Image (cartoon, rainbow, N blue to C red):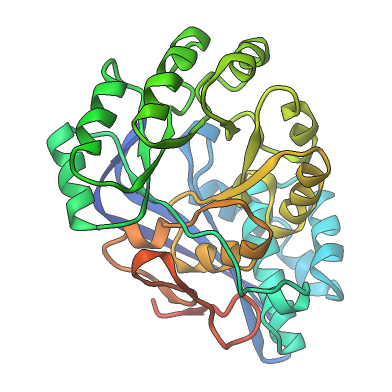
Length: 337
């Protein structure tokens, strides 16, 4: 296989802020794997929280470029097994794994969801994310993008007041994501008020390693709680039972579609709800996530919707959340930049 790496800086429509950081641009790396005239595309974004940059990913992938070129490509799963033994970070593995799946689907001449036997007639709609800002700006963002389901980023000293004000401007369903900013007591107290304000669930209220605190929250919260930073890799799924009602899988964090599909199956077996989230990817990464939709309870795949300009074609998300799956095979992705 021939490999090519492309670095992009994605400009956002608005400054995106969560409890620990803000940014106007998102750096991303697209891996291109080519074989017999067909090319698969995969993506992983940089992330300062995990000390990942496009440069660091490109450097480590570059060290195994010759090995990738010499290997025989059979299945994405076999390729993923190979990557695990190469000492790469999961972010780099994700970009390559997505590309391998896209390539495999193109070789099979089928969309990935059909390769896997998934029925796309029924699927959850994505939320649209409203990052932390002044309340006026958050209201303006909602009015700019009328949507039936919003994820509201929280982690301020007036979180409930934010939701109260936003509720005055829409009857949409809310989800809230505190990104590890709350205490157990704060979470429990907030949950009762948030439930009355039409919030569906709370995502990652406590620090990732506060398992004892999450036990208390699980027992007393008025709302379901979903793990994000506490559920990174496959071995974390089991830990989340008894601490969360569900998990949010990020392809970049777990290492791509191959482990994500196993995590979905494991979560289901444990009675946990399943969500897949994005990391402000372009349509390359969003189209990979979309292939999993029929297996999910919730999804956060609005990354490309937050960009001023996309770099690829693929899955299209229409108003009110309807997904148009490409007729092209694999993830249906083609680069335009």
